[in-house]
Amino acid sequence: MGGETFAVMVQRRRYLANLTQEGLAERSGLSPRSIQNLERGRVSRPRRESVRLLADALGLTGPDRAAFEHAARLGTPTPITAWRGATDSGRGTMADNLRQLVAQAGHAGWQPVDLRGLPHNAAPDVVLDRLLTALGIDTETTVAV
Image (cartoon, rainbow, N blue to C red; front, side):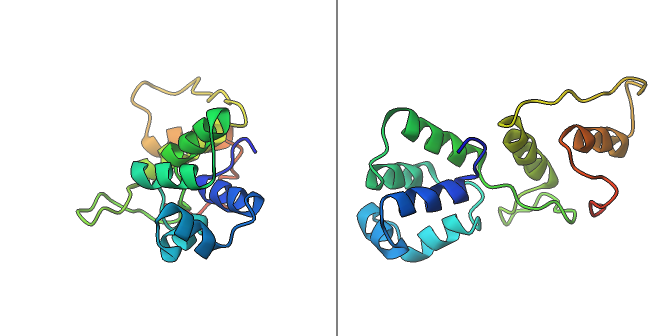
């Protein structure tokens, strides 16, 4: 259960509650489309009110509710496959994707990033390569940004 994305957590909790997406939507007051989008990871960071409504509808309390809310704050990372610059349309940025990736990896235990031998003004691509290596991501097959 640790390290689950919010999308996976919503779906798993819905299954455990023996609810369909429509049933959870009815119970929570959200639309079936919203539930579907959350479970598919199309919503990277849900609104706080939506998370509260879902947690209430699923009957989550104590540590389970805290873990659910924490997963919502971390969001669901989107694949880092192309540059997504800051936009006025509300789309995420590369920095948002990296923050989410690092946050998700942190659940499995932090890995030290070896920056030894780099100058204090090292090129960002070199630092990123070291970070991805520490996270266990094969930098040879990762799509360049």
